[in-house]
Image 1: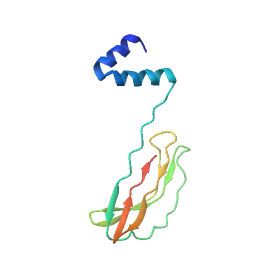
Image 2: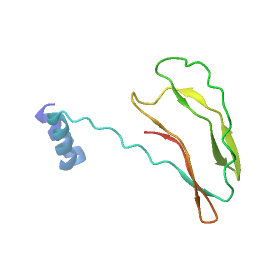
Image 3: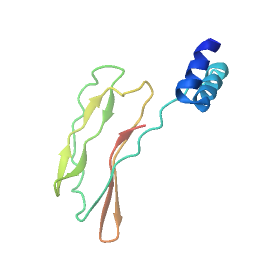
Length: 114
């Protein structure tokens, strides 16, 4: 990156952005986005038992099995069937939803790609 480009960045976005860009370029640093936090929902009733599923043949070596799980929608539990999914990034890992009893209800943490 040229000094002229860095000067333009400094004027447009402030010195902090230019310094961060310089540090990233000169150090060989690769910046990965921070995974977004899983959505959390508080509900009264427990999720139903997990359903048994038949895992069909893997479509390709890139696909990852995301097992079925319950989600809470509009005051009711809805089953999302398991499926083969291609991760959004090369080495992304599916973090399954979690259900925890808390107080008089349940806390549901949605699944997400990490």
